[in-house]
Image (cartoon, rainbow, N blue to C red):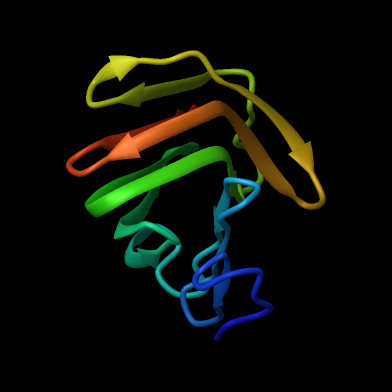
Length: 130
């Protein structure tokens, strides 16, 4: 599933779970192909790995990234929102502490700017759209 390589693990895409990652740019995205309303999957990055998840219910979507090993540089997170879910009421937290982010619709995805977030073992990022 390696798309192109600028170094081991730099650009990686898993077709089954709709996951992509560009290490040098710090961009991760996921758009689950199965179980979009209740999805949990695995991510593999240049310097770490962990879990990604997505839940959808009543025009609310929650996306999470949790580092289980190593570390993860994350500047942007790209997700797909269902119709009726907007980006105006967006909340983000790292380990249950609010963080400042912004979002824009880009190339068919909603892109959350995370300002060069450095995640470490045990960190959990949660993005909530309502």
